[in-house]
Structure formats: structure tokens, C-alpha cells
Length: 193
Image (cartoon, rainbow, N blue to C red; front, side, top):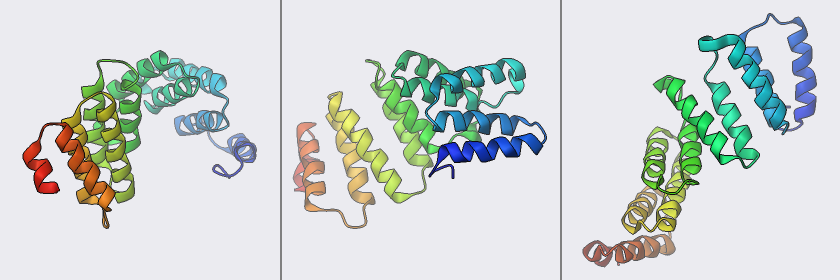
């Protein structure tokens, strides 16, 4: 029900919590349901309450959940603050590709952080195992590179996407070649065309 009817899922989860032993995992899931049901202020206050109560033992994902909530409220400054705390507290093996993608999109909202955002995209691409998802990440990184005027990086990501696709199109080839041309990488552009 979590993906179809979040309110029904919340009702079932509340019934589960009534008979379950208290645990930090249950606290996190309860807060995640608040976020999924678009009750962002409640999710933020609940997560902050658990962070205060649990201290250093709190699940670092609470910081990520708060960051996502602030992002949905269009508060990029607080989203970045909590996302930075999440990255400082989470163990290296606890990150998923979406963490790095979210970090990249958040950093891209602040001028001067484009290089860090692209580095986060690189980490997401390296960590992701689903081909379609990796190609989408490459396309997003290429778009950010283009927007920031970094044509060489755009060419790099378009080339990665082209070489990763099972059946790349002529448009993919053209975009890759043209981005190399715009990056003044004429030899590479010539060999592509």
C-alpha cells in the first residue's frame, strides 16, 4: 500500500506499531510515511524529535529525510544543511545512488558548486547497477554541465551515455559529437562524425 495508498499504509502501520516492540527502525519508518504522505512539516518535526531523543545513536537517514522534506518545501538552504549532515554521519556503505543524485541536484542550486555536483553524479553513476538509471544519471550530469558552460564535461557524459546504450540513436551520436565540437575538442568531434 505504500506506493498506492499512503493513507491506508499509514493506518496499517499504526496498527502494527500498536503491537510491535519500540525500535529505531520503526521510528524511521513512521517518519518516512509522514514524508510520503506529503506532511513535510510533521516529518521534519518528528525526525528532529527522534534525532534529539536518540542523539548519536539516531539513524543518519533522518537527516536525509529532513533534507528531502525541506527540498519539497522549496527550502534549498535547509535541505543542503541537513544533506551535508547526512553525508557527514552516514557510513560509506550506507549510501545509495539516489543519495549522490540528490546531493548533485541540491548542490547545483548553489552557484559555484557545479564541480562538486558533477563529482556527486560521478559517484552515483559508479554506484548504480541499473543500466537505464545510469544512463539517466549521465544525461542529467550532461545537462548540468551544459547549463554551467562546461562543454568538455557535457561531452564526457554524453559519450558515456552513448557507449552505455544498447541501441544508441543517430541523435545520440550527433549530440555527443556536437558537444565535443563546442568544447573545442575537434579531433574527437571529427572522429565521431
